[in-house]
Length: 122
Image (cartoon, rainbow, N blue to C red):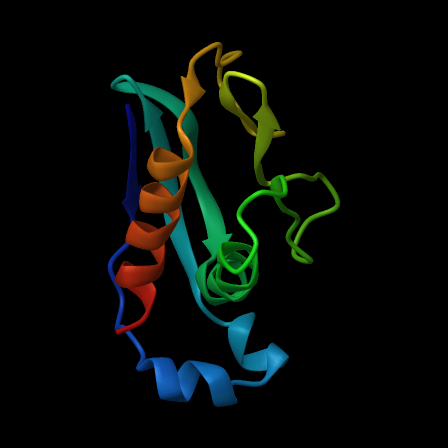
């Protein structure tokens, strides 16, 4: 089971988000932790939340492709990736605490990503 904790900050409207410039996306750093079956997978890393949302919204248009989020804020990438495999999606990150062997369904991955989006925008 995938869960996350994202530092709470002011959410922005979808309309304002669409008009946002790239430089404005770089100002919304939030502490981010990912849990897999209640184990910490990514531990309290700074996430450029609006940059992530911009990438995630594009990916949701074609969720059959791998989800590979690379941040411009760091040279070590991918920040977080879901790789499509025959039996589900594999989660990986340069910041991972352990090798995740669990596979996730498309619905689980989309739900996880949509929950993050909903904590940043409305």
